[in-house]
Amino acid sequence: MFAGVAHLRKVERTGDRNHLRTATELLEQAWRRAESSTHALWTTTAMPLAHAYRLAGRNDLGRSTALSGLRGHAWSVLLQSTPDDMQATARDAAGDALDTARLCLMDHDPEGAATALDAGRGLILYATTETRDLEARLTAGGDADLAREWAEAQRSHLPDDVPGELRRRVIGALAGVELTADGSPAASPGQGTTRLLDPPQTHETRAALRALGMDALVYLVPGDELNGAAVVVPADAPPSWCLLPKLNDTGIAAFESFLFDAAKGMEGADAPTRDSALLGARDRAPQVLDEICEWAWEAAIGPLVERHLDLPADRPARLALVPVRELARVPWHAARARSADGTWRYAMERVVFSYAPSARVLCESAWHDPVPLTTKGLVVGDPDTAGQARDLPAARLEALAIKDCFYPDARYVGRLPDGELSQEGAGTRDEVLRWLADPDGGTVMHLACHGIVEPTRTAGDSSYLLLDGGEHLAAERLVRTLGTGPDRGIALAVLAACSTGRSGRGYDEAFSLSTTLLAGRVRSVVSATWSVPDEATSVLMFMFHHFLREEGLAPADALRTAQLCMVGHHKPPEAMPKRLRAQLRGHAQSDVVSWAGFVHTGR
Image (cartoon, rainbow, N blue to C red; front, top):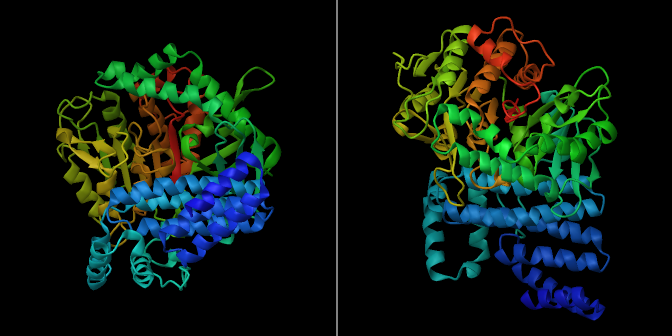
């Protein structure tokens, strides 16, 4: 295989077609030697062989070879011994998935591009939501003898020399399906225990979009230093794509620096400093946030809604966005442009946006039965973190107002507006976990507390809520609590905390508290993708619940309407408490810091 790659590099340097013939023959020999997509050599050979086929003008074969290599990556992730190894393997696979998607777009194959993109995202989602080692996964599936046989083979063979038949049996047991001799699943892995690894076919995605009342799923693909693209899967039309020349790393670089400065400025700050941290970062980097919203319109949303998409004329369009890699940090719903009269017009005026970690997760959301909202649930208001984070006085006011006005039968834990502990609980980790496991606990959870993201590349507390006594409630713990047993039946989780929609393990992984809840069958999640100001969050959250409960809007529509109130394009509810109304009056309508970080995922 390495000799084939070396000849391929000579072709790129010299253009000598004789080297291309030799490279192709050597890579094909390695491909045949692998025999099956369960062998590691299959995945390492796939991309260079696909490239060789393309250089020879055999584009269709190149695409199919690259896509087949992604299936091998899925099996490779399953075979890793530890969660850390799974995540490292999946990160490597994500690069191949993006490269494969770009190959498909070069050949005007948006359906293949969508499959490749979702394969990469599904690999990392699975790897980061699976917290057990390989032996534990096999044993939990009733295959303890197979686990021992695999462990013995690992001790007595080099990794690439483990018998292929044993590999197939182990992968089949982990995936919940039998594999054929070449490593192809006899049925869809989506029918087994590893649904996240199975990119949905186009007809399944379209059916899910129709079930959710959405018009299209849109992947936003970064171009790095080159052109980006949008891959569109409409609910009632074939997939399409469009080139987005400005969707590259030039436009995003300043925004990433802005968010880094804002997060750094909030470390260890007191409550007033917390609320001014983003504004302070904005003062240090003038116009950055304004410019990113204008860039978002110019680079992607404007071309999509004005030229490429066939939008309904009688209502706002409904789109599910899957922003890839660093594009997940951009507030696409806040994309804006100046109208003829000089006022700002926002993308969310024309579109109801929902975000999705992947098309597979979107499909899962669609197939779960709806859960009606009730007046019973759990509300957490600014627990005492024992000095590990600053107080959030506005969050207490927000949480209690939401409980009293909209969920009178909910349990309130944490601190009251005057700083006293609630008689129903202090807001501990165990209290939240017990509620999550209680089938009679209610159908809504509102968490007005600190959310922490710690960048890491290993398993552990990368994203967590900070609760009473400084206890962590990590995304990894939520996986274990919600991912097993019967469906808990939670209609809505609102994470009114900093960065609860942001991944601590890289952008494309989408492994965050919000994604964890979706994977745990929570129907809708509202979360923040960056650090959000305390007082403005409280205003926005009260309005969200008002439009949800009093006006009967769906979660995505309720969030959109509340955000329109923040920019002065919708009248706020009359029932808002005076203190919250005063905070809204003091809010600058042109300032996107205080509302654009919140996003909806799920139903």
